Image (tube, rainbow, N blue to C red):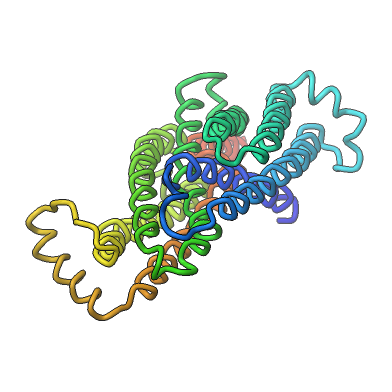
Length: 354
């Protein structure tokens, strides 16, 4: 059990750091309005400074987790203890596929750090954030290139689909983490004066999350088919059971996201005196009366804080998804597990016949 935790815990922290980094850059580019400085009395420089500090924490975490993962993977490949791997590290780095990908990842983290240092002096530059997001995508690719998807070979469809899945999930899940810990607490502090900005940020994030969710869904279906292969394997293997748990977290996320998109955000827009977009007849019949009732019942600050609490719950659910994803990284894929099981059964039957 301890041996398994040594591998899983660094993977969780690595996924969390990478997801938050990509989510923060996605929020900077597509969630925070370009005209944020002109919207109310918000100190946008303070908000961007907090965002940049969070990125610094992510970069440091990625550096630490990368080194720990290299140590644990080297120990696993050499069957040595972690303190005894130092002599074989050069061979791991230059003679193995994992080591070469790790070197690419290290260069990408260094470039990301350089981008952060430059961006720190120019917080208003969106081009630097876009450049850093591209570097973050490279780091995400190094994860896919050393995952189960890479069993099919480099730059194959399974590996690319796993990469797109990770980026989509990071934009969505990392964005929720950043929204709940950095953006909304700063903006909602004086919600009576900034509800228009809260509503605009919520609407922009909802659009980004909708696009990311579509990417997560299509790539997730493909990945599940590739790694599992059948409903029998989904229900009867540890990999499949962990995947089911992950899907339950995702289902809860989708339900909370739908609640925000179709109830919380229109309610924020009502209170901010925005005109609502035209909705379907069923929406007008079922949801609009509820929005009118809630607007009369709650004041503006409570409406904004209820929205933030929902986002916090979604961020916690994202942590559950990341833990499941880390577990999947260290489980035998269901398609292999069944083959291993059949091989053991065949070997046992041959032994019994003898």
